[in-house]
Picture 1: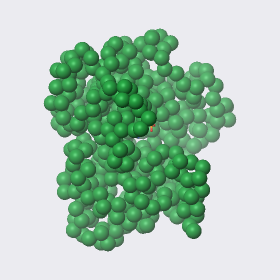
Picture 2: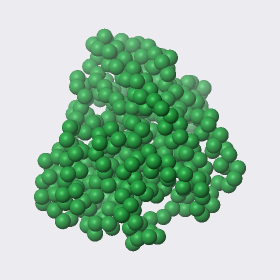
Picture 3: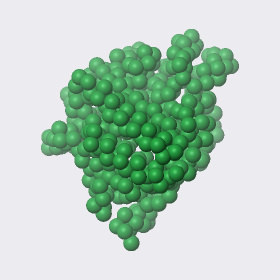
Length: 426
Ligand code: PMP
């Protein structure tokens, strides 16, 4: 029995499904996940010593590459001074200031420890601020696993073809309106039906949890106009896109200003950090200033904050995101071109260090179109690439991630591997 299989069997005895987050279990592609022992730059090594080029990047945080020496040094230095105080620190002010400086719509920000906490808290705050109950979310967008958001959600939920989670009473989601991404008419109809009841619209400004799907022209602008007109809070969930698609997240690229933004992943540089922030008048409603309660024992943790500060500083270096966008483009254009050469149907899209690959002719604009891609071809591509030492996300409903350490040689090695895999896929 291989070491990975042995570990997976052992994991399955101690941990449900052998994993601590569902998509890691390879359920939609089959097989046994490699157990990772260490990572450096663009590479992962598993328990059998096999090296993989990594296009998951810990699902987003590893934008500088794994175990970046400066980030690791900052974490080590912070750890020596104490792991957690449960009291304010100068370091957490500095991370908050760096976030505010990068993302102009954020006037004040509160740090938490995950993306789930960030979105859950942002929605509670939007409800408290407006005194309203209903929220609008979009099918295929994932905003973490808070009860009221597990409604036809994306990511692992989609992969399992399970539109809602057991354990969530219907009453808990009765105020959640789920509409189609890119369907502005449906948003207008919802506001027409409930003009005084909608507290917020939460949206991934580029969806990264149904593979990668861009907003249609005018969609985000339309959400802004509807929220302004009806006094609802517009929340951009940039947990995935923030600081990955551009220096100011998607909001810097599309020119639409949300009232609130949620962040996580990159701002913790691989350590558990999330954040929600936005207009100061809204943030004033959170405890201890306001009546909306929110708290966290490890919020603003000094070791986590140290990793985030260094990461944000490095991302501010001139040309960082242009270089990342160029490298991701080399990868995606190269893969699509090689697929065509072998008669394999593939399209792709990318922005900064985020990409989508679709086994269909054209780039999808809806979840229905993503679902209509050739899922069997994806599975064979995924396993073919894995056996060539290239690790893509184990689901056709996940986006991909490129880091600053994916240089020309790494991209070339990926394309060479894809050439061999596409030849077998025909
Ligand atoms: N929002 C988005 C857009 C995400 O992609 C994710 C996680 N992939 C979350 C929220 C939840 O973040 P976390 O897993 O850190 O709770």
